[in-house]
Amino acid sequence: MNRLSMLFKSTAVRLSALYMILFALCAAFLVFYVTALSERVLTQQTQEGLLQEVREVDGAYKSGGMNLLLSTMERRARAPGANLYVIASPSGEILAGNVASVQPGILGREGWTNEPFRYERYSGAGNERRHVAVAFLLKLDNGLHILVGRDLGEPARLRLLVRKALMVALAIMGGGALIIWFAIGRNALKRIDRVSAASKKIMAGDLSQRLPVSGSGDEFDRLSGSLNEMLGRIGKLNEGLRQVSDNIAHDLKTPLTRLRHKASEALDEDDAAKRRVALEGIIAESDQLIRTFNALLMISRVEAGSIAAELSDQDISAVAADSVELYEPVAEEAGLSLVSTIAPGLSVRGNRELIGQAIFNLLDNAIKYADGAEQPQIRISVTTRDGDVRLSVADNGQGIPSEQREEAVKRFVRLDESRSKPGTGLGLSLVEAVMALHGGRLELLATDESDADHPGLTATMVFPPRKA
Image 1: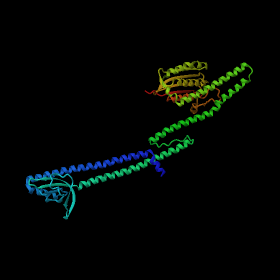
Image 2: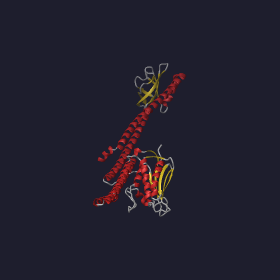
Image 3: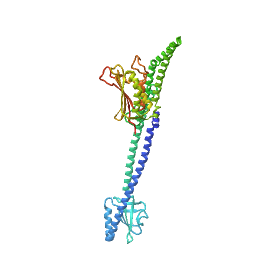
Image 4: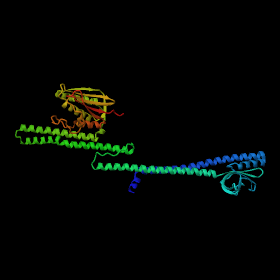
């Protein structure tokens, strides 16, 4: 009973019930309309047939007198399914015809009877049967009255048959609609139950659960698909948080430990020069921690989409050129050559500050890891392909193995386990977050796969075409 109550509370069942009621009203209107239309058509055909009969009978009287009139009416009266034929005196007495009696007051009229009238007709055994008919009455010049009529039994039976057929069809359609209504309601309720069961598991902490999708592509599937995408996003964020928690012990606790150790040494140091050196080391460690937290805050802002409203058309060619000009001295100091191939006048919709920061991160990574090659080199290029704007930073260093590239963009992940090179492990994470905000993607590929020792790394920021 409870399940039936839930069924009637569901939106699908209520909508189905509303549609069924509207359908029933339309069908009932159709039944009465078709019945009335059929009756009107039959009445019109009957009147036209009777008028034709009257003209022929009147023509027989005018051309052959009473003898031809009597013979014509007798012949027509004996035909199968004959109409009503009556010759009556001026007083209303029936003189000839195939009718035994007529409702009083009818035979004294002329023209159409206003309403159907009762009459009695001779049966085959001489008995009389009561019927209802319509008729046209004609008064001859000798005072006699002629009645030509049509029994309404056959049109009434046809009208009743049409109405019964339509009612049966309506009942069948109504029953089918009720069955479909119930089936749709049950199916919707089952799907809602499955969604509810999956939701309870998700609320219990199992974020790997997903809402069921039937594959029909209806509104339930679209809603479940959107919620599943949201759950996937939440799961990804939770996984990132877990990884941050796992890595923070090493990547933040270690600098804090060093910071405390240097502060302790500075307190114990009597020599002013050594104390100054220790304090400068403390400041350097503090600056590194501040940079780490600033990078985390920027990633959080980007992933939260709080900068999305600040996007505008940017000349990425100019941004890349400025970055090259800024990093050329740094590359030369590290013994690297920085080569640029920048197509002029390319624009994207984005945030100049974030794009510039992402380029800085890629160049900084390339400078740190483009070593070991005979001629260390970094190439930055801005091109277009299939409508996308692609900004690439390529080096010929040791690169990143293909199986580790997905890990490389996660927060605090550093493939340099010895931590011999400076960094926070947040550079590529920030670049990926920036590209997600801009609706693009970050691609990591080997610069030269044929070089086993120094395949290098090409990091490409792919921006989608600008919308008109």
